[in-house]
Length: 133
Image 1 (cartoon, one colour):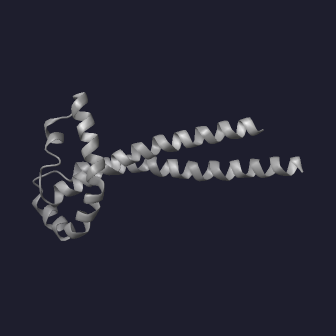
Image 2: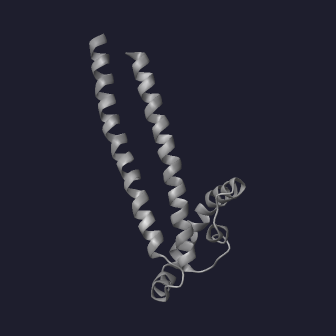
Image 3: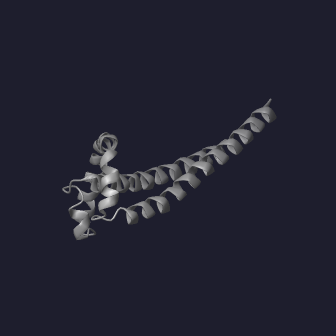
């Protein structure tokens, strides 16, 4: 019976390792893609602004959900003195391009927070299973 429990624990660890690795890979891919999108969304690009204006009604609710996270992060970064001039105007600017840039910045912050949480989840899982075995 003890060998059956140990076998189930090993299989569970194997499945969890694969699943957490896939999630970690997705987080790792997200940051370069978001950086590329940030670079494309330069303010002043009129053609892109016209296209994004059509999606503004979709982006607005998403931005409203992410705005508190971005606001808190910008406040902390401002207190630490690591903001540039563009970062300080990020929340006050209007338009579809700025709304998309705020969404991208929020997704980067969320990516970092979830990556840290994932790291601690894996660490605690490994320590728990090491203590059990």
